[in-house]
Image (cartoon, rainbow, N blue to C red; front, side, top):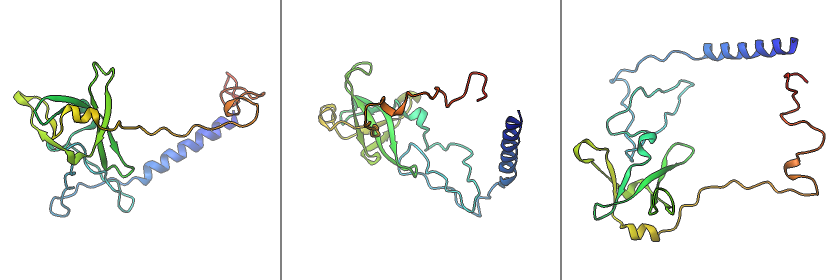
Length: 186
């Protein structure tokens, strides 16, 4: 019981110190700092880089910015303005820069489709007709994309096992769940 009380007090103190460490940010005036430049691609803003420990909040989406949740599924048109695929994913680096749009090409209802990744500058944004969502256009045909090399998603290396024991060192006399009993005490 004392252990639970000490852990609860430590978590409470940590939460309180975190809340006190956050200073409220004052709204910036347009004369003191220019707004962040729009990214090269229309899909996302560059991530805010905190300076001197202060958070840089983005308070709203601009008309020339897209949310990833809405961008996935965007139709991709070929050189002949016919649909050749959809954006199935977005590849970005640890700094938040978009490296590629992953396009699902071919197949039927997701079956048999292949994925190819193309740099954002490979696409032009085409406005949708009659209020429809914008589309992406590429100067390639569906055949050219289906002949392109497949996009390979990163697969972390699997741990190898040595010896005769079960994989991952499981087994032995140690109970599952980190050694805790159903009542939550050791």
